[in-house]
Structures are given as C-alpha cells and as structure tokens.
Image 1 (cartoon, rainbow, N blue to C red):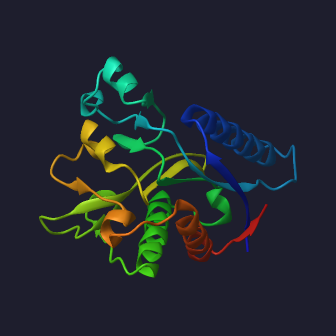
Image 2: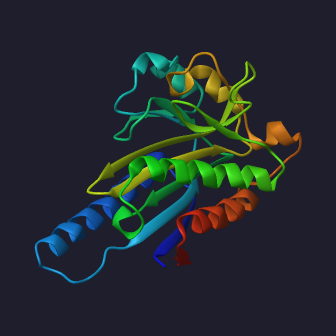
Length: 231
C-alpha cells in the first residue's frame, strides 16, 4: 500500500501554497528522472496538502480571462487577488470556508490514467457528501461534483483542476464547505454560464466546519486510492 505524506497548511496565501506545490512537484519529477537514468534507487514520495486560501481567483491555462468580471480596482475592493496558473480548466474562486486539497502524487504508485485520477477525486467528494446525507454526482462532459446535476437546478459544489507531468500531479480540489458564495458572482465559474454554485452549508441549512469535513474527506481519499497516511 502506498504511503502519502499529509500536511495541513491551514489558511495560507495562494501564491505561497502554489510555490510549495511546485517545489514538491519538481522534486518528484526530478527524482523520477534520476531513477529512470539509473542515478538513484530511492522511490518517489507522495504528498497531499489540505488548506484554505484568502479570497483569490485563479485562471487555468485553457481559460478565458473574460470570465473574470472584476477589474483590478474591483479586485482590491473585494480583498481578492488573481493568478493565471498552470492547471487545466477555466476560472474558479478560492476563499475562507472552501476546503482546498492538493495531491502531489506519482501516479506510477497508483495507476497511469489521468481520467481515472479525476474520477477518483470526484468520487471521494461524492462519498464525503453522502456521509452528510447530501446526494451528489457528475455531469457528463464536465469535471467536478454537482448536486441535481442533470436538472435545471444543477449547482456545483466542488471544482477540480489538475496539472500532470511524467504522471506526477499537482493542483486539485476546491470544495465549498461554508464558502461566501457571493464571490462566485464576480466570475463565470469554470466558464459555465447556466449553472449555479452551492456549498455544504447552503445544502444542509446549518453551519459546518471545514476542519470537520476535512477529516471525512481525508479518509475517503485514502480509501478510494488505497493508501495510508504518514505525517
């Protein structure tokens, strides 16, 4: 069974977390190259980072900047920052109350299939929601987790965007637990104009903590990918 190093980064600036991801990602890719070249017998390590971010909008490399509806002055007025980043997908929002998960996995320890990887992340969130009595699922052709996904009331509760190189992953999950959903009104989330956004708090009609949900999601991810945690 693979081992994954778990780190809780707490509330952390987006750029700081991104830089840390890049450091772990690059070290893993470089180690794979050394192994391939016969320069090392040490295995690569897998990491998973849990955190929250201050208000920030991020645009994936295939996204359209026009899906951000704020100019620079309006971003500042909303205490939000903006980054164009190297994951797939379009624009999304991160902020306090949203559980963010960044797996830096060497998929050679699991399976070499990025589509399966995305489905496993989705399934971990779906099972976490089921733990709280919330029925969720997928929408054909769209990555992420949805409630009432195939109805006019479809609303997204979790966005997923990743980068992969040499079967090493980074970026990951933005899961709305008790997010301030008003911040989504300043973007066209993931470039999708006809579907709403929701949170666990909205669906349950009661307060819920990110720390509580993190523990459930942490266990669901480990069960889905069949690994054990180390600190």
